[in-house]
Image (cartoon, rainbow, N blue to C red; front, side, top):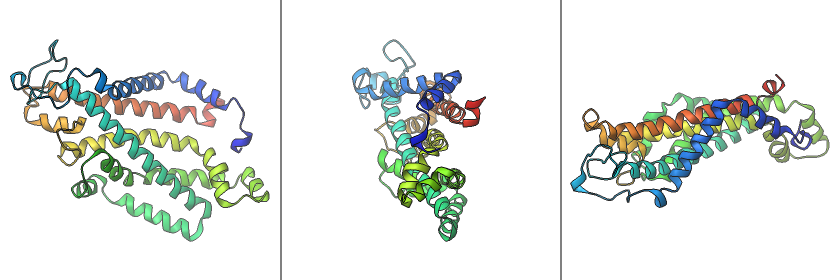
Length: 287
């Protein structure tokens, strides 16, 4: 069924199905809250993220510093909020890039088939065979370590799964009657792909994009922990963990709060992805 003939209430059906997944709804609310608080960090943070106070070095959580301070006396709550802005931005940008690239490659391979399909899928296989983290480490060492460059590097190395999923979806969709009807009406290849096939493959694309955000945040945190991500004094959750590794046992709050932030966001994103997968599953909506 093409997007022109979809029932008007389809979005309502999807929302009704998603609301039944209470864990996904709670997770979406948690993500929205964290994203909003981090976005408003310049307005609500009690200090500047790079404000040094040598008289308050490594203080535990207190009324003056709710999450304590780091080894330069900087307020940890402030740095967690600002770090979340960078980490979440990298996750979202890289997911958009990786999902867009993977969707395009998968759709083209499935729709045109033949030699193009073979070339694109062999390219995907080669990209899959390369260990992601070691290659990210190499590329990160040659790029400027800012949020945009990190998002580009991660996005360009995270498209393969989406390409395979979209290819399988398009292979089944292109044989359906609405595609043949569009061809008989003179629609070109680009119109058929963009206006008819891809909108009907939006389910796995949206789910893949959602899960890619969490994977990107973990990859960025791993690179920053190794000292190859966004460089201090700009905070990210990953480089905050790197800065605290020497005092992990004696000053646990330095690692607990950024670590819990990563855990909360990634776990919530995965729950939302599960909820969307169930809600966008046409078989599930019929149950």
